[in-house]
Image (cartoon, rainbow, N blue to C red):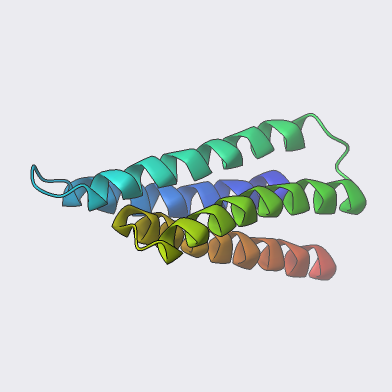
Length: 119
């Protein structure tokens, strides 16, 4: 069930990536930074899917795997927030993307937990 939750997260991020790629133009670096950040976060999700597929499908193991992904997202969020405080525009953008992805991760994790409880 954890793999399905991660696939939903990846699909949401892919849709966001598609929209962001459409924003790229010759004058703005903002969309490029958004794409780079989304790809970095999607790589974390892909790594987590591989980990989940090779793990025991137990609630404790699934919680550990999802917490690990959340910690990776939180680390990026903290780093980008620190940069954003230094008034770096690209850091603001990275922080917005990361905070959004972290919220998506938490929503998917919550939905998977609810599905598991009612199953």
